[in-house]
Image (tube, rainbow, N blue to C red):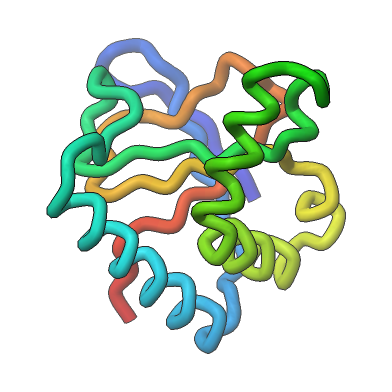
Length: 135
């Protein structure tokens, strides 16, 4: 269910009612995120995009987003392997509520204390964000 309005800056605000992910999956995702945030926040380079207002910000991309022979695909594959547990948990959560979308998405943003609005420049991309959840 969607409702549209505008914020004070003239940007469209879209409110979407989602589907709650099963608690056991949420707990495992949150545990993995907390481990990631703790390890990233104690080291340098925890923000891939410093212009984004977030304590931690990382995009995990499937190598299928790039030409298989490109350097970007190779870098994406290395990073995906490093953070495979996060990717798999995000996939499990998404698949549990929308198997069709889970078979199509190619990137996941992993953020902590993100402030801003989600990108709407690519209408074919749906963003799923798992923040520091409170149960």
